[in-house]
Image (cartoon, rainbow, N blue to C red; front, side, top):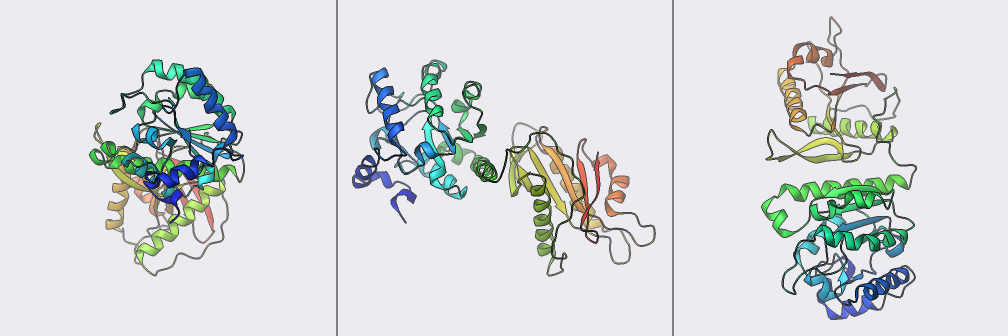
Length: 373
Protein backbone atom coordinates (compact mmCIF):
# COMPACT_ATOMS: atom_id res chain seq x y z
CA UNK A 1 0.00 0.00 0.00
CA UNK A 2 1.31 3.44 -0.96
CA UNK A 3 1.80 6.08 1.78
CA UNK A 4 -1.00 8.22 0.34
CA UNK A 5 -3.42 5.30 0.82
CA UNK A 6 -2.38 4.44 4.38
CA UNK A 7 -3.99 5.91 7.46
CA UNK A 8 -1.52 7.60 9.86
CA UNK A 9 1.18 7.78 7.14
CA UNK A 10 1.94 11.42 8.03
CA UNK A 11 3.28 10.19 11.33
CA UNK A 12 6.44 9.45 9.34
CA UNK A 13 8.75 12.54 9.08
CA UNK A 14 10.10 11.25 5.76
CA UNK A 15 6.60 11.21 4.27
CA UNK A 16 5.94 14.69 5.63
CA UNK A 17 9.04 16.01 3.92
CA UNK A 18 8.14 14.26 0.67
CA UNK A 19 4.80 16.04 0.58
CA UNK A 20 6.32 19.39 1.46
CA UNK A 21 8.46 18.99 -1.63
CA UNK A 22 5.28 18.59 -3.71
CA UNK A 23 3.77 21.96 -2.73
CA UNK A 24 5.37 23.67 -5.71
CA UNK A 25 3.87 21.21 -8.22
CA UNK A 26 1.57 22.80 -10.84
CA UNK A 27 -1.67 21.54 -9.28
CA UNK A 28 -0.58 22.98 -5.91
CA UNK A 29 1.24 26.22 -6.69
CA UNK A 30 -1.86 28.50 -6.79
CA UNK A 31 -3.01 27.04 -3.47
CA UNK A 32 0.41 27.51 -1.92
CA UNK A 33 0.39 31.17 -2.99
CA UNK A 34 -3.15 31.51 -1.62
CA UNK A 35 -1.98 30.25 1.77
CA UNK A 36 0.98 32.61 1.77
CA UNK A 37 -1.41 35.54 1.33
CA UNK A 38 -3.76 34.21 4.04
CA UNK A 39 -0.92 33.75 6.54
CA UNK A 40 0.42 37.19 5.78
CA UNK A 41 -3.01 38.78 6.21
CA UNK A 42 -3.61 37.00 9.49
CA UNK A 43 -0.07 37.29 10.81
CA UNK A 44 0.08 33.54 11.41
CA UNK A 45 2.27 30.67 10.24
CA UNK A 46 1.98 26.99 11.10
CA UNK A 47 -1.45 27.55 12.63
CA UNK A 48 -2.79 27.25 9.08
CA UNK A 49 -1.65 23.90 7.63
CA UNK A 50 -1.11 23.26 3.93
CA UNK A 51 -3.37 21.46 1.50
CA UNK A 52 -2.35 17.85 0.95
CA UNK A 53 -0.56 17.63 -2.43
CA UNK A 54 -1.65 13.99 -2.74
CA UNK A 55 -5.18 15.33 -3.26
CA UNK A 56 -6.30 16.95 -6.49
CA UNK A 57 -5.28 20.53 -5.74
CA UNK A 58 -6.83 23.02 -8.14
CA UNK A 59 -8.02 20.14 -10.34
CA UNK A 60 -10.35 18.81 -7.64
CA UNK A 61 -14.04 18.35 -8.36
CA UNK A 62 -15.24 17.73 -4.82
CA UNK A 63 -14.32 19.86 -1.80
CA UNK A 64 -14.72 18.39 1.69
CA UNK A 65 -15.04 21.12 4.30
CA UNK A 66 -14.61 20.25 7.97
CA UNK A 67 -14.56 22.65 10.92
CA UNK A 68 -11.00 23.78 11.70
CA UNK A 69 -7.57 22.11 11.74
CA UNK A 70 -6.79 20.12 14.88
CA UNK A 71 -3.47 19.71 16.69
CA UNK A 72 -2.45 16.76 14.50
CA UNK A 73 -2.97 18.78 11.33
CA UNK A 74 -0.84 21.56 12.78
CA UNK A 75 1.78 19.00 13.76
CA UNK A 76 1.96 17.38 10.33
CA UNK A 77 1.46 20.78 8.62
CA UNK A 78 -1.21 19.26 6.32
CA UNK A 79 -4.98 19.04 6.22
CA UNK A 80 -4.99 15.39 5.27
CA UNK A 81 -6.82 12.09 5.45
CA UNK A 82 -3.43 10.60 6.38
CA UNK A 83 -2.89 12.55 9.60
CA UNK A 84 -2.12 10.45 12.70
CA UNK A 85 -5.49 10.73 14.42
CA UNK A 86 -8.71 8.75 14.52
CA UNK A 87 -10.82 11.39 12.77
CA UNK A 88 -8.45 11.34 9.80
CA UNK A 89 -8.50 7.54 9.82
CA UNK A 90 -12.31 7.54 9.64
CA UNK A 91 -12.15 10.14 6.87
CA UNK A 92 -9.67 8.03 4.91
CA UNK A 93 -11.90 4.97 5.24
CA UNK A 94 -14.99 6.87 4.07
CA UNK A 95 -13.17 8.35 1.10
CA UNK A 96 -11.77 5.01 0.03
CA UNK A 97 -15.20 3.40 0.32
CA UNK A 98 -16.67 6.13 -1.89
CA UNK A 99 -14.44 4.96 -4.78
CA UNK A 100 -13.65 8.56 -5.67
CA UNK A 101 -10.27 9.05 -7.33
CA UNK A 102 -8.13 11.01 -4.89
CA UNK A 103 -7.26 13.43 -7.68
CA UNK A 104 -10.94 14.49 -7.73
CA UNK A 105 -10.95 15.49 -4.05
CA UNK A 106 -9.56 18.20 -1.81
CA UNK A 107 -9.89 18.56 1.98
CA UNK A 108 -10.09 21.85 3.82
CA UNK A 109 -11.76 23.56 6.78
CA UNK A 110 -14.47 26.17 7.01
CA UNK A 111 -12.07 28.05 9.31
CA UNK A 112 -8.58 27.30 7.96
CA UNK A 113 -6.56 28.27 11.02
CA UNK A 114 -6.16 26.55 14.37
CA UNK A 115 -8.60 27.76 17.05
CA UNK A 116 -7.34 25.71 19.99
CA UNK A 117 -4.99 26.35 22.88
CA UNK A 118 -2.29 23.88 21.89
CA UNK A 119 -3.88 20.97 23.74
CA UNK A 120 -7.52 21.07 22.72
CA UNK A 121 -9.42 22.59 19.82
CA UNK A 122 -12.46 24.72 20.64
CA UNK A 123 -15.60 24.94 18.54
CA UNK A 124 -15.59 27.57 15.84
CA UNK A 125 -17.83 30.56 16.46
CA UNK A 126 -19.94 32.62 14.05
CA UNK A 127 -17.23 35.28 14.35
CA UNK A 128 -14.60 32.77 13.22
CA UNK A 129 -16.70 31.84 10.20
CA UNK A 130 -17.32 35.49 9.36
CA UNK A 131 -13.57 36.19 9.40
CA UNK A 132 -12.88 33.11 7.26
CA UNK A 133 -15.56 33.73 4.61
CA UNK A 134 -13.45 35.97 2.30
CA UNK A 135 -10.73 33.31 2.21
CA UNK A 136 -13.27 30.61 1.40
CA UNK A 137 -14.58 32.70 -1.49
CA UNK A 138 -11.04 33.06 -2.80
CA UNK A 139 -10.43 29.32 -2.49
CA UNK A 140 -13.57 28.44 -4.46
CA UNK A 141 -12.42 30.77 -7.24
CA UNK A 142 -9.18 28.76 -7.47
CA UNK A 143 -11.05 25.50 -8.16
CA UNK A 144 -12.33 25.73 -11.76
CA UNK A 145 -13.49 22.09 -11.86
CA UNK A 146 -15.45 22.24 -8.60
CA UNK A 147 -18.80 20.41 -8.89
CA UNK A 148 -19.67 19.62 -5.28
CA UNK A 149 -18.96 20.53 -1.65
CA UNK A 150 -19.46 18.18 1.29
CA UNK A 151 -19.98 19.99 4.59
CA UNK A 152 -18.69 17.58 7.22
CA UNK A 153 -20.15 18.16 10.68
CA UNK A 154 -22.70 20.57 12.12
CA UNK A 155 -20.28 23.47 12.52
CA UNK A 156 -19.32 23.37 8.84
CA UNK A 157 -23.00 22.97 7.94
CA UNK A 158 -23.86 26.12 9.86
CA UNK A 159 -22.13 28.04 7.07
CA UNK A 160 -24.22 26.51 4.29
CA UNK A 161 -26.05 29.75 3.45
CA UNK A 162 -22.77 31.63 3.23
CA UNK A 163 -21.22 28.97 0.98
CA UNK A 164 -24.23 28.87 -1.32
CA UNK A 165 -23.68 32.58 -1.96
CA UNK A 166 -20.16 32.08 -3.30
CA UNK A 167 -20.62 28.97 -5.45
CA UNK A 168 -23.16 27.10 -7.55
CA UNK A 169 -21.61 23.76 -6.66
CA UNK A 170 -23.94 21.06 -5.30
CA UNK A 171 -23.81 21.03 -1.49
CA UNK A 172 -23.98 17.83 0.55
CA UNK A 173 -24.06 17.41 4.35
CA UNK A 174 -22.45 14.55 6.26
CA UNK A 175 -21.91 13.75 9.95
CA UNK A 176 -18.50 14.55 11.39
CA UNK A 177 -16.20 11.48 11.37
CA UNK A 178 -14.85 11.98 14.87
CA UNK A 179 -14.39 8.81 16.94
CA UNK A 180 -16.72 10.26 19.57
CA UNK A 181 -19.55 10.60 17.03
CA UNK A 182 -19.01 7.23 15.36
CA UNK A 183 -18.53 5.29 18.61
CA UNK A 184 -21.47 6.80 20.49
CA UNK A 185 -23.79 6.89 17.46
CA UNK A 186 -22.71 4.02 15.17
CA UNK A 187 -25.45 4.82 12.64
CA UNK A 188 -23.67 8.10 11.86
CA UNK A 189 -20.88 6.14 10.16
CA UNK A 190 -23.43 4.65 7.76
CA UNK A 191 -25.04 8.05 7.22
CA UNK A 192 -21.66 9.57 6.38
CA UNK A 193 -20.82 6.69 4.08
CA UNK A 194 -24.13 7.13 2.24
CA UNK A 195 -23.48 10.85 1.71
CA UNK A 196 -19.93 10.22 0.46
CA UNK A 197 -21.23 7.58 -1.95
CA UNK A 198 -23.95 9.96 -3.12
CA UNK A 199 -21.42 12.74 -3.72
CA UNK A 200 -19.25 10.27 -5.61
CA UNK A 201 -22.19 9.23 -7.80
CA UNK A 202 -22.99 12.88 -8.47
CA UNK A 203 -19.45 13.67 -9.59
CA UNK A 204 -19.43 10.64 -11.88
CA UNK A 205 -22.80 11.64 -13.33
CA UNK A 206 -21.45 15.10 -14.12
CA UNK A 207 -18.84 13.47 -16.30
CA UNK A 208 -21.65 12.00 -18.39
CA UNK A 209 -23.96 14.96 -18.69
CA UNK A 210 -25.80 17.76 -16.86
CA UNK A 211 -26.73 17.73 -13.21
CA UNK A 212 -29.71 15.70 -12.11
CA UNK A 213 -32.92 17.65 -11.82
CA UNK A 214 -34.37 18.18 -8.38
CA UNK A 215 -37.87 18.10 -9.90
CA UNK A 216 -39.89 14.93 -9.65
CA UNK A 217 -39.65 13.36 -13.13
CA UNK A 218 -42.41 11.48 -14.86
CA UNK A 219 -41.63 7.95 -15.91
CA UNK A 220 -42.52 7.09 -19.50
CA UNK A 221 -42.76 3.44 -20.51
CA UNK A 222 -39.32 2.26 -21.56
CA UNK A 223 -37.77 -0.95 -22.75
CA UNK A 224 -34.72 -2.59 -21.25
CA UNK A 225 -32.90 -5.63 -22.49
CA UNK A 226 -32.54 -7.89 -19.50
CA UNK A 227 -32.30 -11.52 -18.70
CA UNK A 228 -35.61 -13.07 -17.69
CA UNK A 229 -35.95 -13.17 -13.92
CA UNK A 230 -34.70 -16.65 -13.16
CA UNK A 231 -35.40 -19.13 -10.44
CA UNK A 232 -31.91 -19.85 -9.11
CA UNK A 233 -33.12 -18.71 -5.69
CA UNK A 234 -35.42 -16.09 -4.21
CA UNK A 235 -32.41 -13.94 -3.31
CA UNK A 236 -31.08 -14.09 -6.87
CA UNK A 237 -34.49 -13.14 -8.27
CA UNK A 238 -34.72 -10.21 -5.86
CA UNK A 239 -31.21 -8.98 -6.65
CA UNK A 240 -31.87 -9.20 -10.39
CA UNK A 241 -35.09 -7.22 -10.01
CA UNK A 242 -33.39 -4.53 -7.94
CA UNK A 243 -30.70 -4.24 -10.61
CA UNK A 244 -33.39 -3.88 -13.27
CA UNK A 245 -35.08 -1.12 -11.23
CA UNK A 246 -31.79 0.68 -10.76
CA UNK A 247 -31.21 0.66 -14.54
CA UNK A 248 -34.74 1.96 -15.09
CA UNK A 249 -34.13 4.96 -12.85
CA UNK A 250 -30.67 5.55 -14.37
CA UNK A 251 -32.33 5.95 -17.76
CA UNK A 252 -34.45 8.70 -16.19
CA UNK A 253 -31.25 10.47 -15.09
CA UNK A 254 -31.49 9.31 -11.45
CA UNK A 255 -28.54 7.38 -10.06
CA UNK A 256 -29.57 5.30 -7.06
CA UNK A 257 -27.37 3.44 -4.61
CA UNK A 258 -28.16 -0.14 -3.55
CA UNK A 259 -28.78 -0.92 0.13
CA UNK A 260 -29.20 2.78 0.84
CA UNK A 261 -28.88 3.47 4.62
CA UNK A 262 -31.28 5.99 6.15
CA UNK A 263 -32.18 6.90 9.71
CA UNK A 264 -35.84 6.10 10.45
CA UNK A 265 -38.02 6.17 13.54
CA UNK A 266 -41.15 7.49 15.23
CA UNK A 267 -39.23 9.87 17.50
CA UNK A 268 -35.96 11.76 17.55
CA UNK A 269 -34.22 8.43 18.22
CA UNK A 270 -33.36 6.91 14.84
CA UNK A 271 -32.18 3.53 13.66
CA UNK A 272 -30.68 2.68 10.30
CA UNK A 273 -32.72 0.83 7.71
CA UNK A 274 -31.24 -0.08 4.34
CA UNK A 275 -33.72 0.55 1.56
CA UNK A 276 -33.27 -1.48 -1.62
CA UNK A 277 -32.31 1.65 -3.55
CA UNK A 278 -31.93 5.28 -2.57
CA UNK A 279 -30.37 8.66 -3.09
CA UNK A 280 -29.59 11.65 -0.89
CA UNK A 281 -29.82 14.12 -3.76
CA UNK A 282 -32.51 13.98 -5.02
CA UNK A 283 -34.05 12.46 -1.91
CA UNK A 284 -35.57 9.17 -3.05
CA UNK A 285 -35.98 5.75 -1.45
CA UNK A 286 -37.19 2.69 -3.35
CA UNK A 287 -38.35 -0.74 -2.22
CA UNK A 288 -38.36 -3.43 -4.94
CA UNK A 289 -40.56 -6.55 -4.84
CA UNK A 290 -40.71 -9.23 -7.57
CA UNK A 291 -43.41 -11.33 -5.87
CA UNK A 292 -46.11 -13.23 -7.77
CA UNK A 293 -49.45 -14.89 -7.10
CA UNK A 294 -49.12 -18.53 -6.11
CA UNK A 295 -49.28 -21.06 -8.98
CA UNK A 296 -52.89 -21.84 -8.09
CA UNK A 297 -53.86 -18.17 -7.90
CA UNK A 298 -54.00 -17.97 -4.11
CA UNK A 299 -52.94 -14.92 -2.14
CA UNK A 300 -49.22 -15.15 -1.17
CA UNK A 301 -49.86 -14.20 2.47
CA UNK A 302 -46.22 -14.27 3.58
CA UNK A 303 -45.25 -11.99 0.72
CA UNK A 304 -48.06 -9.56 1.56
CA UNK A 305 -46.57 -9.35 5.06
CA UNK A 306 -43.27 -8.29 3.45
CA UNK A 307 -45.12 -5.58 1.54
CA UNK A 308 -46.75 -4.39 4.78
CA UNK A 309 -43.29 -4.17 6.31
CA UNK A 310 -42.08 -2.03 3.39
CA UNK A 311 -45.00 0.37 3.92
CA UNK A 312 -44.09 0.63 7.59
CA UNK A 313 -40.50 1.56 6.70
CA UNK A 314 -41.83 4.23 4.34
CA UNK A 315 -43.98 5.58 7.19
CA UNK A 316 -40.93 5.83 9.48
CA UNK A 317 -38.72 7.48 6.84
CA UNK A 318 -38.18 11.28 6.74
CA UNK A 319 -41.12 13.08 5.18
CA UNK A 320 -38.99 14.95 2.66
CA UNK A 321 -37.98 11.71 0.93
CA UNK A 322 -39.85 10.57 -2.15
CA UNK A 323 -41.03 7.00 -1.59
CA UNK A 324 -41.40 4.58 -4.50
CA UNK A 325 -42.62 0.97 -4.47
CA UNK A 326 -41.31 -0.78 -7.61
CA UNK A 327 -43.07 -4.13 -8.14
CA UNK A 328 -43.47 -6.87 -10.71
CA UNK A 329 -46.75 -6.77 -12.65
CA UNK A 330 -48.27 -10.21 -12.12
CA UNK A 331 -51.91 -11.07 -12.91
CA UNK A 332 -54.07 -13.58 -11.07
CA UNK A 333 -55.42 -16.58 -12.91
CA UNK A 334 -59.13 -16.17 -13.43
CA UNK A 335 -60.02 -12.53 -12.82
CA UNK A 336 -56.70 -11.09 -14.07
CA UNK A 337 -56.25 -8.75 -11.09
CA UNK A 338 -52.63 -7.70 -10.60
CA UNK A 339 -50.97 -8.42 -7.27
CA UNK A 340 -50.42 -4.68 -6.74
CA UNK A 341 -54.09 -3.90 -7.44
CA UNK A 342 -55.10 -6.55 -4.93
CA UNK A 343 -52.72 -5.17 -2.32
CA UNK A 344 -53.91 -1.59 -2.74
CA UNK A 345 -57.56 -2.73 -2.61
CA UNK A 346 -57.20 -4.81 0.54
CA UNK A 347 -54.37 -3.06 2.39
CA UNK A 348 -55.09 0.58 1.53
CA UNK A 349 -55.26 1.44 5.24
CA UNK A 350 -51.59 0.43 5.64
CA UNK A 351 -50.23 2.57 2.80
CA UNK A 352 -48.72 5.93 3.85
CA UNK A 353 -49.78 9.02 1.98
CA UNK A 354 -47.61 9.93 -0.99
CA UNK A 355 -46.15 6.50 -1.79
CA UNK A 356 -45.70 6.03 -5.54
CA UNK A 357 -46.21 2.67 -7.24
CA UNK A 358 -44.45 1.55 -10.40
CA UNK A 359 -45.32 -1.78 -12.04
CA UNK A 360 -42.84 -3.54 -14.31
CA UNK A 361 -44.31 -5.94 -16.86
CA UNK A 362 -41.78 -8.68 -17.52
CA UNK A 363 -43.46 -9.91 -20.70
CA UNK A 364 -43.76 -6.41 -22.20
CA UNK A 365 -40.31 -5.49 -20.87
CA UNK A 366 -41.54 -2.11 -19.73
CA UNK A 367 -43.51 -0.07 -17.21
CA UNK A 368 -47.27 -0.57 -17.41
CA UNK A 369 -48.50 1.41 -14.45
CA UNK A 370 -47.49 4.44 -12.39
CA UNK A 371 -49.79 5.55 -9.56
CA UNK A 372 -49.64 7.52 -6.33
CA UNK A 373 -51.38 6.87 -3.01
